Image 1 (cartoon, rainbow, N blue to C red):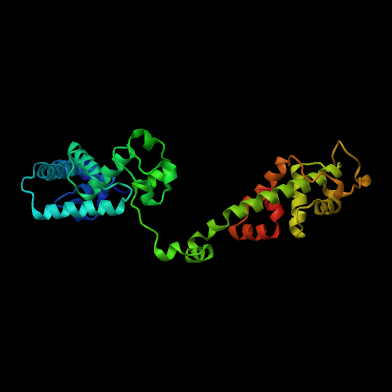
Image 2 (cartoon, rainbow, N blue to C red):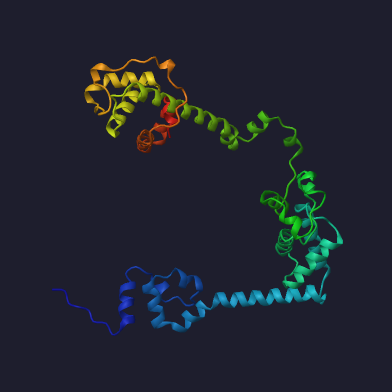
Length: 341
């Protein structure tokens, strides 16, 4: 029988457990950092709590110390900006470069004294040094509040939509979200070559957008296929009263259409119905299988108002079991049935 090892305390036991998976240099690392604490598991954290609590507390305080140091740095930089004290030529060049970048990337923001004063006052009120991120935040915040004058035509928005300029809370409230986004995000003019492309040339130059080109056409085709599918199923149901619309019957009928590569038409459903009669359940509201009514399909209503929800569910269940490759092949072979999705 293996002898039980006795430990002097919890820390010694934890070290015995950790030494099996944690390197000694990690257990006894000279200077713990905040990242060391974050990446430690609960056992290692407890071990350090018991054996190195001062080091642990110092490491945990690092983010707060760094944040305080950054806040102090920001405060000193803002003080130089607000008072002009120790303001150097390099600081002035940086400010001019940031202003030029703002003007270039936000052309909708009118370049005038009123807007410049509004941006400067916002930076002073928020106690922010005029770095580019801070100036960009000032522009977007003020523009969304209607506190700066905007020229919508500068980013391609028609003048008859909002007028020559947008200024004030009321006018900015009339701007759509899409147009406001256009005026408050970094804007780039379309290249000269791209602006003269034909539609076919544009799509050829952007193959990643190919799926978008015929999106509406595909949707229209799918709707038409679905309508035709509804019509064909309804024609079949109206002429074959002996057919019982059970889940099992539908499964057998759809499997027959698929295996014989038949479209979803009333004629194909009639063929499947005749072939599968011995295996199909009989409706209790219609005729016997041996006395099926024969009706000219061409005289039936081509625009039924509904299609069985159970049939749709049946098709969806079968599609859910297909792989992506099988599904794509199925869409090509059976567009009418696919419309029932």
